[in-house]
Length: 295
Image (cartoon, rainbow, N blue to C red; front, side, top):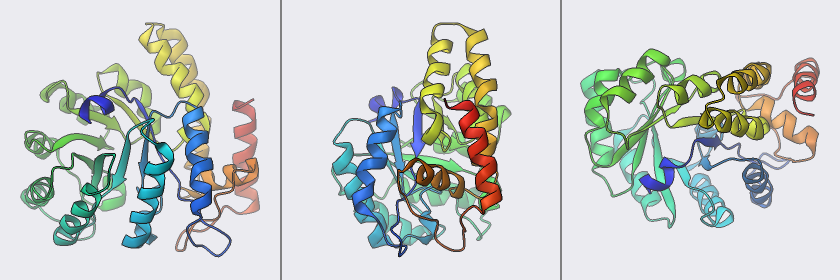
């Protein structure tokens, strides 16, 4: 599975579709997945932050993962949100995910709220890695968790066989050091859409993106320009998509993406509380930018 992910540069952290009552809308998963794959998504992350994992029950997550795997049908790798801030509960859940056929990896977020030390973080992820044969990708997002997985700890964890990569949100200094100090097959994805281009430039794997819901084609063109060593074109696309990335994070995610998809007729419902939908002014501003960039 690592080799499969090695070829995936643009992964989309997929929204979870809900119906008008706020329940999972399984019949909409096919529409979302197929739209993403038609627009150059090369891997799906399901049950992550953008998928509103904090408000999904374990049963809902497993049902969503099974449906996503069924719809994807091996066309791209599927990564499933796999952990919480409870090590024992995460181990039990990872074993259930590992039993699903076709999962490329589990995405394991840094434990939030507990505020573990770096040694505690190492022992937590080590325990998760030893729980099954499922490959794991670390997810360091200090702005949400309140805890930073330091580069030195990431490098320790990268030596464990089941830990195959990281989704990193510390910035380019951390990306650079991790890329430099890990083996070539260790996956380093940006969790910050604005850093999709520079992360790739310094040798990273690509981006696990929210904005690729709407600018997947342009991200693909940007990476193709980079592959062709046309840095001027790549930079131009990077500048072009900058306002869209700002727009999709202008209010707490995934409300903007859900607003855009609903406007486009790709119905995904509203976010679950405590997240709320975009108000009319927010939606108008977002759609104005989207319509300017995506023609």
